[in-house]
Amino acid sequence: MSCHLNNIFGSTMKTRLFTLLVLFALGNINYAQAQWQVIYPPLPDSLNFIGWGISVVDENIVWGSPKINIANTVYPPTSLTNKYYYKTLDGGKTWSWGEIDGVTVENDAGEYWFNAHLCGVDSNSAWVVRFEAFGNDTCEIFRTTDGGDTWVRKTPPFEFTTSLLGIHFFNQKEGVVWGEEHYNASVPYPDGYPGGWRIICFVTGDGGDTWEKALLPDTEDEGIMLAASSGIFDVIGDHIWFPTTKRVFHSGDRGKTWNASTPLWTNRPVMLVAYRDTLCGLAFSDRDLGFNVVPEQFKRTEDGGNTWATIDVGDWPNIRIDLEYVPGSGGVYWATSPTHTALSTDNGETWSFQTVPEIFWFAEFLSPKVGWGAGAKHPTPSTSQLVMYKWIGDSLLCQPCDTLSAAQEIPGAGVSVQVAPNPVTDRLFVRINAGQSESYTLRLTDINGKTLLETAVSGGIETPVEVSGLPAGVYWVRVMNGKGEAVAKVVKG
Image 1: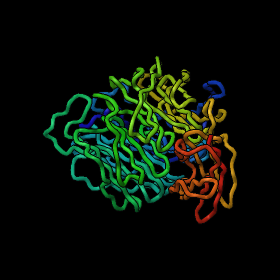
Image 2 (image 1 turned 180 degrees about the vertical axis):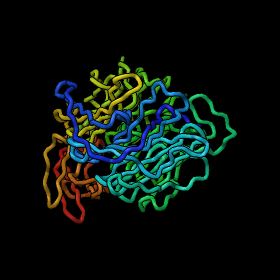
Image 3 (image 1 turned 45 degrees about the vertical axis):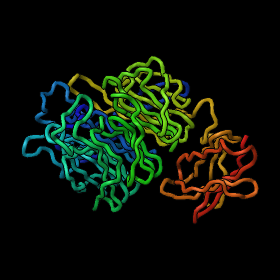
Image 4 (image 1 turned 30 degrees about the vertical axis):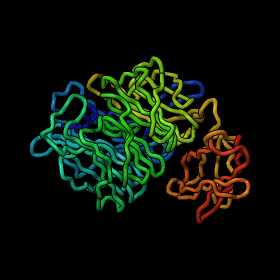
């Protein structure tokens, strides 16, 4: 059995989908200019939901996959399966929940199944990957295109026993799933690392009708410690990253081909990753698989994962479970745990901490103003109530630093662009104010019009441009596609 059993989740009863008016609750977490609104969606108490993985589509649409409180339940749980989802389409004013129909609940051997990860695409479309966690690992994938009323099985073909633990769709058609397969059952299973297991990925370009194995580096005796959820993997445009028991895997072409970093730690897994852009990111490892932070547990890359440097973060409270970058913030990261949240406004160098009024498991941000979290309240050890957190505070911006969020918007013909910092010394960040599905050409030229760099970029994300090797002077950043063009003047100091 693979090593993600601490992240399984199940449920207890079949119910029908209905819409519930939300009740807003009133705990606010205050950092300087920071504020969460705590929301208790009034789902039936009998479901015993715990807020677990969430998928934030936009400021109004949030899908969630609950965990079930299994306190005081015998092992294996004889009445627990997880086949539910919940969502809001109006920014948390109303909520609905329902059953993922057609899924395996219990097989002939009495083995139970759980949602590993849910990915929302829009108000009607979502994907869920499920696995069987108490016996021979296997999995299945389901898709809805009608808001959750019906679900269709879209599972890839497997050659070996396989546990798929994460799924992401870039649009309605293109998606990737990843996990681990048991290719050699005769290999012993050492503590903390999966013997006879290796990483596996499948990609689809037709909405899951067909799947192909992705091209991976050698991954023998390498697995995944945690079922995917917010903060355990990261996506920027066409790029996606996820951690394994040894390394950080990265794809720049929507999962078709992958590369991997060198091992980040000795005999310790990489647990969480969060990327600011395609070059800069943080990784977290847990020394004792207890999620207790010690100074050597954070590392940072500034060259796309080729090298990693340890960050000495000093003494922390019991922070664990989630690590998130705030897109467009210029360097703000969040970390969460059941009892605390941690905030860094300087790219992970220093952190501030705050206790939370209710358990806080995961958070996901789309921008400095749009963020959601999920957690739980426990009236008794064996009962749970879903808790959602909605960011209502001021914009989360890097302090002090020049950020794209604060940069002037430069309009063009059919498109606008932001650049920061300006003047610049080493690395420039460019954001095209459009959706991530929009593709553009980014061209950097000198004052005479000579092209120094030309690359394809997506709208809505921060694109780093290395300029440290250029002489001081005036340069032009031009972004263009068939719909429009914008030009920004940049001064290199």
